[in-house]
Length: 215
Image (cartoon, rainbow, N blue to C red; front, side, top):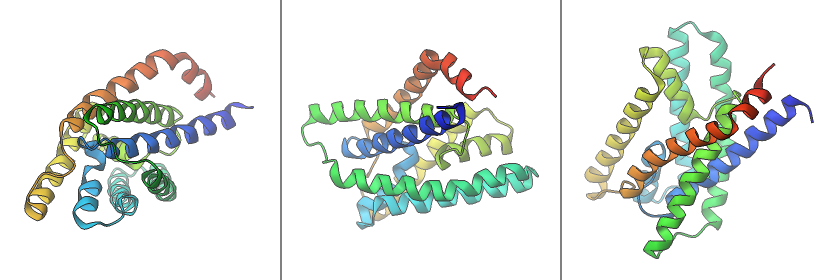
């Protein structure tokens, strides 16, 4: 198998694992990752489909990216931004499929095990897909675009964007449901844990990744 095909395969498998990780995150029932907290909380409050709401949020992320790249006159990136829409549609269908067949954990011990698996899968999936430097997941793409637009580091932008999402989730929860929905100890663990898993993955497979994406 040539490098390009292997690169695409790693990317697809990474997105698949990422979808499993995000779904497990919702099934642990301990609080979800900030990036999906808004659609998840709305889904829990209204009963609307989680995958469909995630697609709507991702579409908003894509529009914001396009606006940023138009302002920066980075027209080459706009093509990549637009390609995130069909990717998001496929990705959110996977979320729906996994949500249907993966049960919600009930026992507290099992919930923490599920959360651990969620963090590992999310970190590994994100690292695999991002490392291939193809079309980014909208959740990652908007962080990169905002970092470029405001001339800030990706790490700082990621932290601020996570806080922004959590604030929106808390406002929706308190003003509509009158209780906190989707935010808990699992949210904090996910914020800390996913980044560590990504860093560990890159540390272990750095040479292989560079070899694969090198022209």
